Image (cartoon, rainbow, N blue to C red; front, top):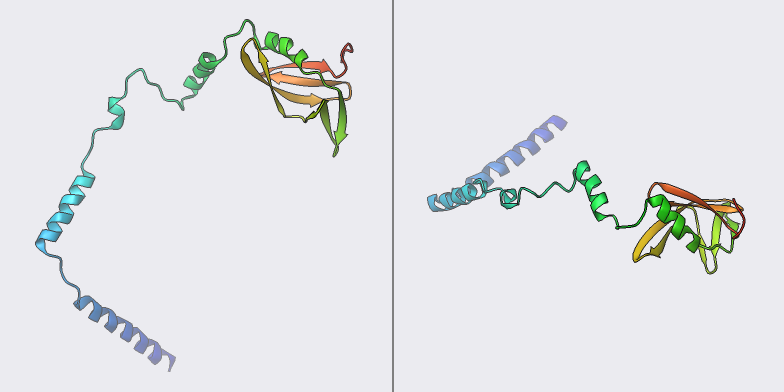
Length: 159
């Protein structure tokens, strides 16, 4: 009984599709020609937009270029990162250290710094960004690029 009802349902669907297909019109020759012309325009090869670029232009995603860009865009200074860090680190004068939620915080008057926080320090007309990399009860560590320096929390004491 089920197979007869399934067969009947399938035949009704096939008959409906066949009747639907008979009513479609074939597009005219002019309409087909217009569609083919549009397709050929879309598929036609075009001049590469990179052909008009100068030869001196380099790929910005190349690792070689990234290394060059760092040296070109680096601020002009009178010393290495270590020397600059030694000169600008005394500008951070913490008033103390505290633990909050089990994590150390460096207190700078109204500001609280955590490990990983960035501090922008101006020096000789250039803004340098140093990162707090470690906080201990008596000292803290700052990083500029790949150089690090340890400073005491209280002035006059060595870490």
